[in-house]
Image 1 (cartoon, rainbow, N blue to C red):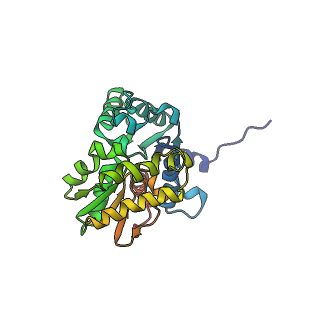
Image 2: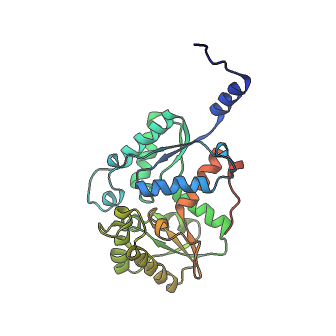
Image 3: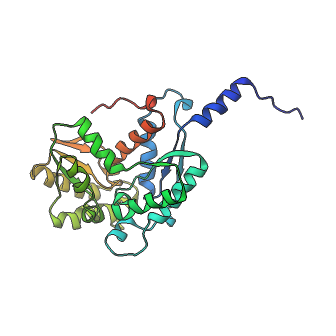
Length: 272
């Protein structure tokens, strides 16, 4: 059988592949949020043909990742940071140069700082983006007129003080819904076994209703924008605005940041 010959175009393609900054996704925290991030990377990439899209390696191994909210709330002692760091190392070995995880609680210092230490001690060179810091930079750049920001999230994100610490340092005033809404409608919209987004994978009417109730409470408290502070929430709230409220989607912001790092010329212009 005759062997296929390698032409000049094949060699050029191989060189380009070596130079390409491949995107890696830790996509199992949770799996539906991982799919949402992948879809948003596609949607925010300037492309006409299949071949115009960026290379993405998505690793979804949710059974290896302990629940981040349960860890932060003291319901489990297993820090998911070690498994996340191991999956980032897997992505790097597969060729990824820049990576992200679509999970807000994974960026809490008790988790994210351990991931960073694990990567550093192992000599990993993959660039791991901090989604919450990307949100702060995005808001300063695109919404400089906004000062009061509300957060919808799981109880783990609220208790970690993640958004107030990072966005507060950037000059924003952070607002939270009343405690009963946080513990009830909002948290259950994500975690309830019958109608929560994690279990259903879609926005049930009850889950969306609870989240919108939280957003309205934030608006009444004076919020000018609302951060969808759990990466399952954008599955239920896809609007860019809810009446007067600007909607901030961290998954979308992370998708744009990953494209920026991989190939900035491919990033679509931001349209509010």
